[in-house]
Each structure stands twice: as structure tokens, then as C-alpha cells.
Length: 202
Image (cartoon, rainbow, N blue to C red; front, top):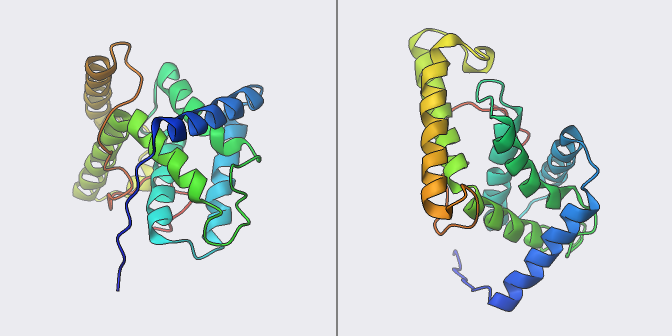
């Protein structure tokens, strides 16, 4: 029988995690984008070797979507957006976890909280990316193509531009500068559409 447990992070708790994320960013500031993506991917690969609780698995799926945004040739994020997503992933490149990943059951708990914080910050990016993946899946199917092989096909250009412009407008509306914290959760991670994945086999 499922057991529902909810908890709230206080300002003090959030400050603790924000400080840990800042320390990780400072420690990994020298890393290349490829190294950051690879390190975050290793977290997913490590988790895949264990039976993690569902509430952690759901959040790892969201981390996989963030990595997919950077690896997806078709999505082709502008450089400023790439850097913003990369800065959110740096925490997962720091081997000094609050809770070591080797601790049974709870080893990925701090990672799940950090992912949740990243998802809130990148809500509009993830929403737009999910819609793009669904459009690509449907349009590729209509054309008799495999969505994993279309790359930067011309027929993706208009939809990609439209979604990225909307993403920027919504971020600017919510955050003033285009980036920051936001309430609510992105849907990314639940789409059945193809995207580059280090967690799932499609």
C-alpha cells in the first residue's frame, strides 16, 4: 500500500541547499560543458544500477530531460540558454554530495531535492522542450521518419523558434531578467516523445 509523506523545506533548509549548490558551482567552475554533462550523466548511470524509490526516480527522469536539452541537436539551444542549463547541472558534477550516493535508499535524496530546485528554475525551458519533442515525434511519424534521425531538419525550425521565443517571454515575465526561481513544476520527463536519454531505452 502506498504511503504519502510530504515535507516542507524551511528557509534555513533552502539556504543549506543553495549554499551547497553554490559551493559545487565554485568547485566545478573550471569544468568544460562536456565534462559537466558527462558528470551529470554518470549520476543517472549510477542510479540505474540501484533500485531507487519512485519519488527519486521521477526526479532523475527530470534530470535526464535537462541533459537531453543540451545533447539534442534538433533543439539547438542558443548559447546563453545552454550556459543557464549548464550552471544548474554543475551541482551534479561535484562528487562531494550532501548525502553520498552509496548510502542505500537515501543516497540520491539530496540529488532529488537539488533536481527539484533546478526544475523550478528551468520550468519554462523544460515545458518548451517537452512540447518540441512531442511536435518532432508527431511530425516525424506523419512523414514516416524516425525522430531520432531527423537532426536539425528544416521542418523543425519554425516550431523550435516559436517555442524558444515563448520560453524567453515567459521567463522574462516571471523573473524580470529571464532567469530565476518560479513556483510550479515542469511537465518534462513524462512525455512519451523521443529525446536523447541517458536513463531510458526507446
